[in-house]
Amino acid sequence: MKRITIKNAKLDVDSIRYNISSNFSEDAIKKTGQIIENVRKYGDDAIKKYTSEYDKVELDSFKVNNEEVEEAYNCISDDHIKTIKLIRDRLIRNETILLEHLKEISYLYPQSENIQRIIQPISSVGCYVPGGSARYPSTLIMCVTPAKLAGVKRIVAISPTKTDGKIDPLTLVSADICGVNEIYKVGGAQGIAGLAFGTDSIKRVDKIVGPGGMYVTIAKLLVSNVVSIDMLAGPTELVIYADDKSNAKYVALDLISQSEHSKDTLCGLVTNSHEFANKVEEEINSILARKISRQEIVTNSLHENGFIAISENEDLAIEFLNEIAPEHLQIMAKNELKIVKKITSAGLVLVGENTPSAASDYCLGSNHVLPTMGFGKSRTSLSILDFVRISNIVQSSKKEIEEIEPFVKIITEEEGLINHYKAVKERVRDS
Figure 1 (cartoon, rainbow, N blue to C red):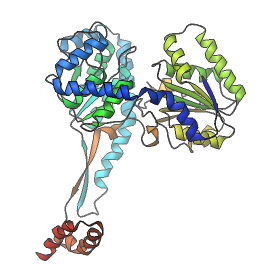
Figure 2: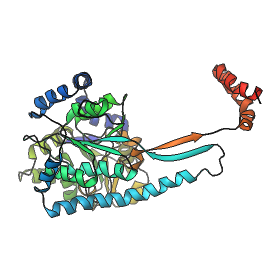
Figure 3: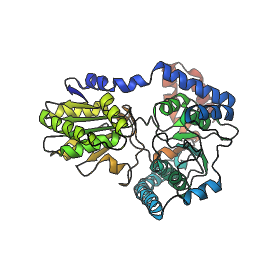
Figure 4: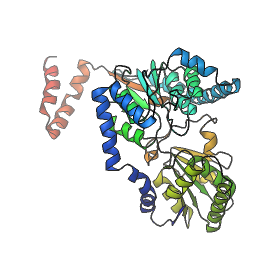
């Protein structure tokens, strides 16, 4: 893991993020753009071509049928179903609290004679569920549950298939339990393009949500001029702030757990102690020496993108944390509650040694679709807010137009938009 001593928060963060940002190279963007353009032009044929090329699967049809869903139920246990429902129900419990507050917005303007604000669900959403070297039924739950609770009428899910041309059974069952309307066996940039532009098989959606790898994230960015997206969500990130009183083994386990997603994850430790940094590194090496699951991915991830940052004082450490704005930020220190109050930039803040990201990813009731690449500075996790729009309805009276006319004259003259004023002035003259 890379070691640095924090001196200038912005420059130090830039140096750490360099490897990740360099993955979004001109070549990667050009390649993704070509995939998107071909899907826009050639629709299903292009998707089939790229599915064959990248997923090594030949598909005649993308849409999952009822028989495939029924077959998926035969492949899982009652405990699997209980787990799906527990994750969903815990998420619903927390999202419902937010929903109740949203409903209050419609009642906040009784004093206003001319403005109404109404909460409306968006009409359709496409949920991207990653595949590749791992399966993510939990991500489907995280994307679909708040959409369903918000009242979205058409919820579409897409996910890459396994080598047998089928989607992971637990993902299919999760989709059925959570109320997905359509499921398609499509992944990658071609899947994002299908949702954005529509094809003969896939009707376009109004918004695309969900995390993904580099090409999916680039694809979401490139289609955002024609369809709304939630955020740039991926590759995953975890930064842990811990002092010399923290449990080095827990820190090591948490860094390893997050780095097993893919080789381009960003995982790091910020601490005030060289001795503690050494302990964590020793723990990581000890764990990796035992030949763990997904070892090659973990090793490559920590070697290429992992870091340990030493800070001489707490204020500098907090400045660094706010600048890097990680997807997950764990705080494991003796004055953790004091530190939390100073954090202004993170997708999700996890407090205490018993709040690992490995738990929040599944069963704590929080959503694990989170902003990456510094976007934690401006937003947090996926929620009901991503699936509703606040509709503004304005109605003015002749009297109000007369009252504001002189002020409209002043501002339009300053901006040089005189025809705006004339449109108001004529109404006053007609009164």
